[in-house]
Amino acid sequence: MFKSKIHSLSILAFIFLFSCGLGYDPPESFEYSKKIIGKWQQIRSFNLIDETKNPMAYDWIVVEDGFTLGLNTDGTFEYTKYGNCTTGKYIFYPNFGRIEFNFDCEINSNGESVTKIIELINEDVSQNNQLFLDHPRSSDICKEDCMSILKRIE
View: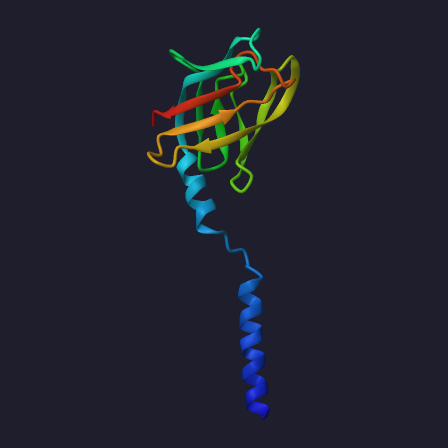
């Protein structure tokens, strides 16, 4: 009887330890975060083309020489969308599909001087060569560069 209690307690302890996670990250978030690492360039922009229609008409516009985004494995970035301030650190939240950029200096985002922005991010899972970014907005009506498609260049 004593041995069966010890055996039962050992099984319960084993189940408890592994159910708590002990720092285990699901493979999807690790693989996904590795897929966004690299250098990307904007190739399309989602813009308002006719605000007189109801609902308003938006379209993907081809972009020549768009901004670039470099995401490094050490959590640093280079992002040319917001002018002269291009570097900082990022935090990627794979479970929420968002990325937080903490710039080294102030940027202008929607008429405000800020050092942090949060963008929604999604990847093209079929080819792993495109990212989709949903940029921050000051209102529900976005006129230019509401979203971007970026293509891997490195």
